[in-house]
Image (cartoon, rainbow over all chains, first blue to last red; front, side, top):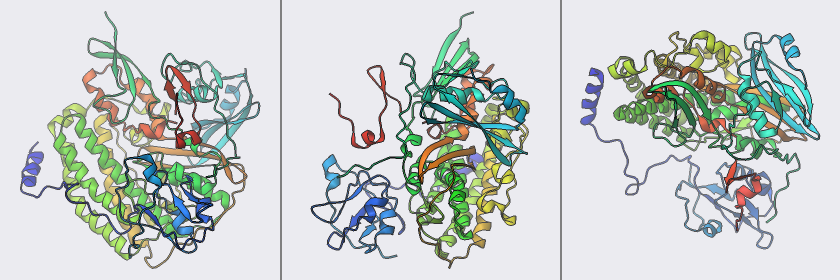
Length: 117
Length: 114
Length: 386
């Protein structure tokens, strides 16, 4: 009983540990696997990413001839980025993926520069 | 009814780990997994069960077979005789119909095209 | 003498996952207990059927959020000998560091929920504050806080370098003095010792007859740990041998103290393994492998007991996958140990066996009183109803 009371008194004088999420964004490390990006002008449509995907989220469009990803099926495993021969797929640090309508998941995000490691 | 208890007693294992069933055309193959020699080795004992036949329950030799056999009865329809827990519904609500046999897709899985 | 049935669940404030307990009650003493399962059945064994080996590994890793690395290692224990691949020692040491850190994080989570059951909310918050430092380590090493998935067959996705290993040692030095103070509270606090001692007894003979596993059996005096009896991967090296903690009380207090002591043994293994890794070596690249043979099996020591996987292969694709998790082996003791206890002791007894219900179950969809079976294509695309 006594040890618990001493511990509580020590913690009264420290800063709180909780982070205020919507006002201040939490920090993640450089290696965090976030939303997936594809540079569609440089894709050579070799279909290696489509064969290796576990859920069938990334498909090479037969009319447009570049790879298209459905972000609601992607499990962020990283196999497509490892297998691609021209390195046009990368992961950013963004963790806010949710959308309001189901058809918005197939829209392509504007490509950002890959994170330097 | 298929007799299993006499052969299990001859093996004289330390522990029963699990019971698995692999479905095939016209019935099932049941595998019993045992461990020996102070938990170092694992060996299997397998029998073939044609469709619609009953198997004798192993509850008199190992007590924890009650829950493992009830799971097989509910998901695959293999019936065991002499198990007091076999009527207990583990995975379904009361009042629903009996167990449906799982459809085995097998190894010919084809991905849908765009 | 009137006998009534007192239900606990499926939804209840004292349970963290749904389970249905039916207690036959006379006054406030329990005479008989039954249980029903099946509220979070998701069909993992069906999802992995018919796929290639690397794809099925990603389905198996997502069985449980708390213990995801131990399912991945049990699947690799079964499949890697069938392909005949030579795995370098650095990959084994990386897998050991992730597995032992996961054991620490699972025991800290359990300690917080146990304090929440008896009403000590402050102790619950202190346990989960220390857990945040461990999740920051996972973010740096593997890329995600839960569902880490750092493994491929025969190799790993990235190799640890010097800054990663230094961060691991700094965070462990920061967390260790606080966990020692929390262990003191669990051992000496008046409310905890009076509510936990002499309730939920499991004598040694019952633990051997029912074949219980994990810290539940080790608190009753049974000496069984998979890392000691049948060592796998990096646990065979001489400096990394495990000394399991064994107690003889067999009640809820004994099971609490075992989990508090296992955290320090895991920290010793992580510190030793960090010294033995060579930080300049790179892991090999991914290869396409072919598996030979009919079936194989593998087992590991999860935070809750012995985990067993059975894999049957045909044409390099999976024909049948079976998981037997440690909670399924321990749940049969619920019916025996609750007889003669009071209703108010039930949340403490249920939580002291540490159930992880989402690991245990395999989808039954019930609509309008009838049952249907869905295939995995229908689950991904959404079935339409009239």
